[in-house]
Amino acid sequence: MHVPVLQSEVIEYLDPKPNENFVDGTINGGGHARLILDKTGPRGRILGIDLTPELIVRLKRDLITEGQSQRVVLINDNFARLEDIVRENKFHPVNGLILDLGFSSWHLEQSGRGFSFMANQRLDMRFNPREELNAWTIINRWSEDEIGALIRDYGQENFWRKIAASIVADRQLNPIDSTKDLAQTINKSVPEWYRHRKIHPATKTFQALRIVVNRELSNLVRVLPQAISILAPQGRIVIISFHELEDRMVKQFFKTEEEAGRIELITKRPVKPSEKEITQNRRSRSARLRAARKI
Picture 1 (cartoon, rainbow, N blue to C red):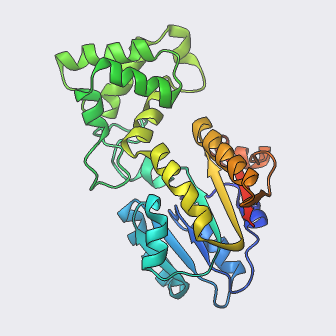
Picture 2 (tube, rainbow, N blue to C red):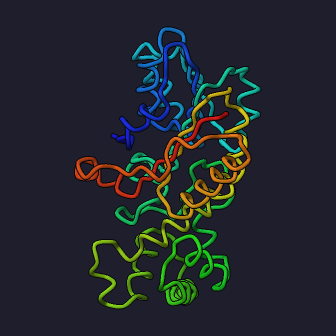
């Protein structure tokens, strides 16, 4: 089961009150949304958006079973269309917004779309299977320079040159079809000592592929201004990032908006999970939360 990160911190900074409305732009399994629903009864609503259709179907079923579906509107779409989605669903006023930029345990363990090198699956990595670009196309069709730049820029991988060269060399012999194939190619292209660290040598490359396939950074750039626009005055926004590039973008955006007098920061520096949470949920270790209030 997916465990939402920084649960008490999300509630502290969003500060949901009875009958307020919130948007969860990455509703996933509904973990944060349920916490908000508990605080916003009896008439507060949530507009939940997620790019993965299977997660929307599962959550809709679960909320019906739990008797909470009446206060939740679920939309399978890209949060980069946030203003349009809010307008199309006549969802006003918006008292708060949460964006949890991580991806779920379902993607890793149940989707079968090759997000993890721990299972041998076809390279895909699309959150939404209707999208055209997938990881297989990048690995087997893109040039060595393009693959190298991807791994360098989005994975921040020091051995990007060697990894990209190995990928191109191996695919000339046979297509790199699966996560196992790609992990083996990466493993043999890095130094011996690099293979024995706590972090698997393929981690950063897989991360970079996922970011590019799903246009995660460009979608974040698109949604940030909309996130402020849809909020009612004094509305709160909480963003949880798991990647240095994401956190840097959120930090700079908040700084610019604060200087323009449109928001006030609630968190002066990123809020990190406690040691206890990291022990209980290892995937929370890289989470960084930033929050602000619309003026």
